[in-house]
Amino acid sequence: MSEDQADVIESLGEFIAHALELEHASEAHYTQLADSMAVHHNAAVETLFRQLAELSTAHAAAIAARVGDTELPRIPPWGFKWECPGAPESSDCLEGDVSYRMTTLQAIEVALHNERRGHAYYLHVADTATDADARALAAEMAAEEAEHVAMLESLLAGQTDADQAPTPDDLDPPHMPG
Image 1: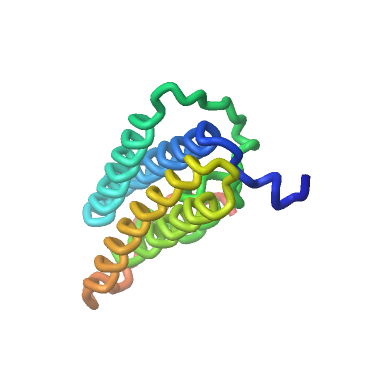
Image 2: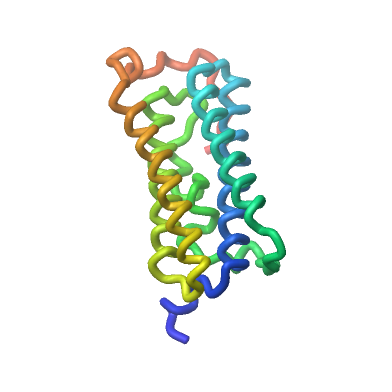
């Protein structure tokens, strides 16, 4: 099996397991970010991340509703077939871009990056899976992710100069070991 074939989804169950992991990881990540923003009184960014967490929760519920009698494989964390160490909609590849002081604009840009990665992942599965049902479901999910991307692009386009203003200096920064 070539390296490219090792990343190919081979069954509907395997795809559903991947999709559920992606959406649950996304929901957990956005909830964690929202909680962090709440602690630091960054209400606008907290609200955005909570909305994204709710979208991920709804997406996971829709996927779970389709499981039926499909047998889902048990996949260890290192066995998932995606490029970053974590799920495509997690921040594993963007750690430096997330801060408790981020602006709404910065939060939208991070979320847009993540949603584009999720969309690209589903498109990849729709193009490469060996199972026709997995390809069809991946195409549906890619279309849903495209809606999330469009929503974020619309939010991004609606940002004002005030939304893009740098945050003031932190008068009580956290102690960060060097």
